[in-house]
Length: 201
Figure 1 (cartoon, rainbow, N blue to C red):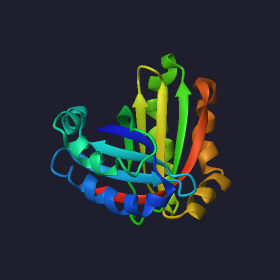
Figure 2: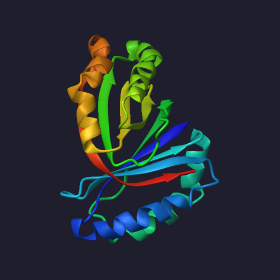
Figure 3: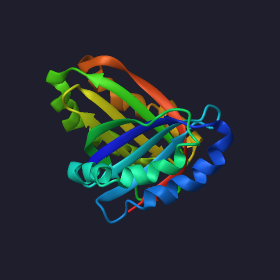
């Protein structure tokens, strides 16, 4: 799988339009290698992260080269304050949940690892994240990797903000990241978001 992570700041007074339009626009990707899409939003600032997962890199590139991304983002031009800031990643792992919906909250953790240790991280981290399946609020996870830079973007999805907070309070998150502390090139940055929309294939 392959992912596109797109950062955009929207006008806060137009967020109702964004919430309504985004799932309709992303739904047009279905049948073209599209796997899933998530709109992460900070209602206070209008900052958003659009995460779209494709079956492979070719499908993602075709989405843009074929004009599908442009057609989907054009209606949002009058709603946003910034232009799309797109980043591309291999999906190193997808962890599914027996309770995939509803999703209401997301945590993005973005660590950078030493290149010579990155393969080791990618070999072990998915199994540690999979331990979250025991938590009733867990709704799934994606690990996005840039093997050239050592950047990892971990997206974990939760049924509620309280579920995500419980994952950190009960030590599960720390147990996931602590074994890799010596492999870090840069400390993780964690951000938290309301999941404003979910679109599945």
